[in-house]
Image 1 (cartoon, rainbow, N blue to C red):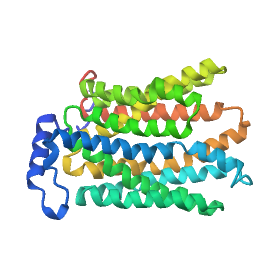
Image 2 (image 1 turned 30 degrees about the vertical axis):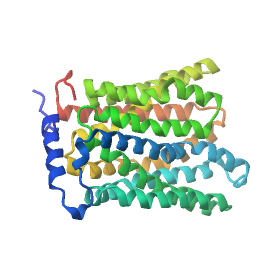
Image 3 (image 1 turned 60 degrees about the vertical axis):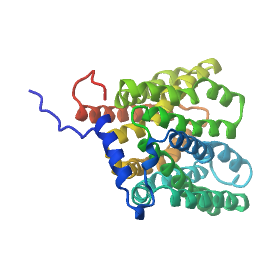
Length: 344
């Protein structure tokens, strides 16, 4: 007999609705974050719209660091290697993810308002400092540490409140908000390839999978998205030698990876009590800090080793990492419900 795995707690709709209502009516003034407006439709839509705009300006710009790296290579930091310059982008991602746990805890305790105000100040300040920075260490501090912290203080308090306003269509609402990051990235990069990438998948493939997951299960769709992203890298990217094949891979990978990004948060919220959602989401992103810090330099080292026109090593590395990650998510899903076709 196969030993059964201990089940993780899952909060069904009815129980979570009661929890949201109870927290809404019992929130103390000292928290400054009453969720009594969770029943208001206007409040729901304003929350999603605000999160969309926050991600449009912040996460969209952070995802477009490749554009900044290209400019740094040709202008301010032309004396440094691409691998060295990539530490700026890796640092901003690392700080963003690492800040998730403390910011999530602060959100659960004090609410989003103060965090959003401070995050806005740090985000704008970092951009102003980047404009006058000339040395590598100055850009590392401004565009790496300060920028990453500002984005974190705007991202987490923007996404977490959506989970308290939406129950049945929570993933759909989060997917709409997350699409702001892809639209922001597309506008910042602005090229023919990126426009095609945006029109084909970046926007709708962060919303459509989220909508489907509300009906078929968040974990089920997340596992599928992670697995197919890995397959795209190991199967399609390795074989893509001409422009049509590369565009086809871009469309497929953007579709599945965009779905993965949108579905992570609903999965965390599904196994979390409403009072712990900010902390749980922050903890998840904090665990991503280490790989986000070393991922860029590793990719740069693999490219430098094989020459900059050969992406085989980096492709295999990315594909295997995604396949292993999908296996871990599948194990977590089985701990919730071992029935293969269950809606989880």
